[in-house]
Length: 171
Ligand SMILES: [Fe+2]
Ligand SMILES: [Fe+2]
Image 1 (spheres, helix red, strand yellow):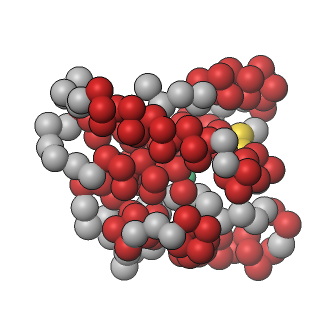
Image 2 (cartoon, rainbow, N blue to C red):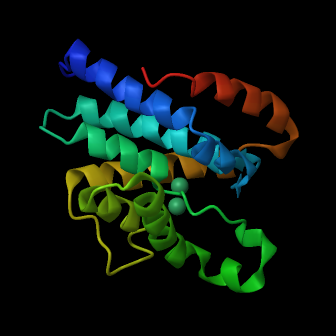
Image 3 (cartoon, rainbow, N blue to C red):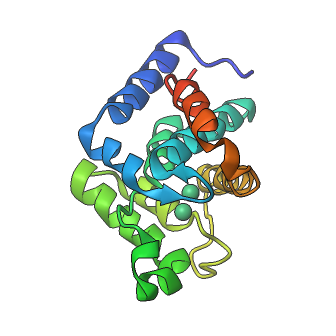
């Protein structure tokens, strides 16, 4: 692992915990995601993986923005299964909805918004990932989404307990 100071680590952990316990974010537990997951568990898993990969890179990255963007990348807050029109456009549209919700509720920076908006590249072909931070979040999302898609619904409850435990801390 790259050297990341204890101070920096604590700062990131604090940001993570504040989101984890924020009632606005807890609403994401009600948003269905992939097979037997929800947007809350999914997003914090993506955040943990993205931070791990970012620290491994020997590069000066904006870890704080990366973390916030990873947590909020799917902060779109609707169930796309509810409505046929939403379902059709979901893959392309949700990054923009998530970014605008993130701006409204957390006043995130444009840098964070860009990471959120580009997380579905290349499906949203015009919104390519311009920064390393954006590529790390997009790739971490793919890894976690693939894992979620290929796990059996049969063990959903057991798995969810495990993941709720797993996401309790960033480090
Ligand atoms: Fe997404
Ligand atoms: Fe996602």
